Length: 218
Length: 232
Image (cartoon, rainbow over all chains, first blue to last red; front, side):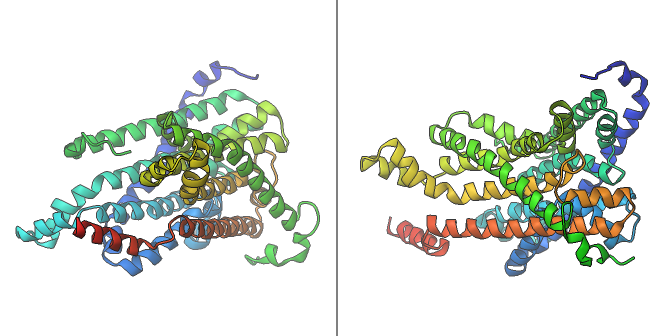
C-alpha cells in the first residue's frame, strides 16, 4: 500500500485551503436554503392542495443525482461549467427540496388546540407564528437541517469530476497517482467535518430550544 | 454547438460505449447492487425489527452512511481491489444497505401491535406472525427503503465512471475531458431521467403495497376511530 504520512506535513497549507473551500461550498447552501425554506414552508403549510403538488415536485428534484444537477446548472445560470457557483446553487436547491418538507412537517405537527389557545388569549398571527408555532416546529426543522448539512458535506467532493470539489480533489490526486495518503486524508476530514457540523447543530438546538432538551429528537 | 446535438445523433447511441450500452450498464449496476443489498438487508432488518434488538446500531449506521463521501470510498476500494465490475458493485451495494436495513427494521417494528397480538392469540407461530402479519404491514416501508437505496445507487453509479466504471457517468467524464458540453448534458439529462423514472415507478409500487396493507382509507379509519372515541 502506497502510504507516506510525511506528505501531510508537506502539504498542510494546501489541505487547509481545501478544507476551508469545502466548508464554504457545503455550508453556504445550507444557510441560503434555511433562509428561503422558512417562509416558503410556512406558505406551503397554509395551502393544502398547492402544498402537495409542490412537495411532490421537490421530491422529484431531490431524486436527481447530484452530479447531474451540477452539470445542468450552467444551463439555468449561464455560468461556466467550472464555476463553483454551480455547486453552491445545486446544493442549495437540494437543501431547499428537503428543508421545505421539514418546515411543513414541523408546522403541521403543532397541535391545533395549542394554536387555538394562542389565538384565544389574544395572539395575532405574527406573534402566534413566531412565539408559538415556529418554536414548536423547530425540532423537526433542526432534524432536516442536520440531514441537509451532513449530506451536503458528503456531496461536495463529487464535484471534483467537473473540476471543483474541495476535499474531493484529494481523491482525484490519490487516484491519479495510485497514492493512498491523500485519499485517506480526504475521507477522514470529510467525515470529521460532517461529525463536527452535526454536533454543532445539536448544540445550537440545545441552546436555543432548551425546552426540548428532555425529548430527544433524532 | 447545440445542446441536443449529442443526444440526437443516432451514431452516439450504437455499439459498445454507445448510449444504449451505457444506459443498460447503469441499470445493470443498479439492479445488481440493490439486489445484493436487499438480499442482506431485508432478512437482517426483519430479525432486528422482530426481536427489537440492535436498533440503536441500525439508526447509527444510517446516520453515519449519509456522511460517507461516495467518491472517496469508490476510489479507495478500486485502488485496493483493482478495476472491474466486482469492486464497484460491492461499494454500491454497501451504500444501498443502510436505507433498506433501516426501513425494513422500522417497518417490522412498527407493525400494528394489536394485529401482532391478535395473531399470537390465535396461535400463529413466530414464523407465521412475521410472514403473514408483520411483513405485509411492513411492505410499504420496505419499498420506500428500496426506493431511497435505488436513488442513492443511481447517483453513485454515475460517479463510478470516474474510477474506471462504466454507465452513464462515462458521458460526463469524456464530455468534460474533451470540453464537449453537449455530451455532458446528454449524460446528466439521461441520469436525471433514469432516476426520476425509477423514483416514480417505485413510488407507485409503494402506493399499491400501502393500499394492500391498509385497505381502508385513512379518512375512514380516522372516522371509525373518532366513532370509537365517542362511544367510549
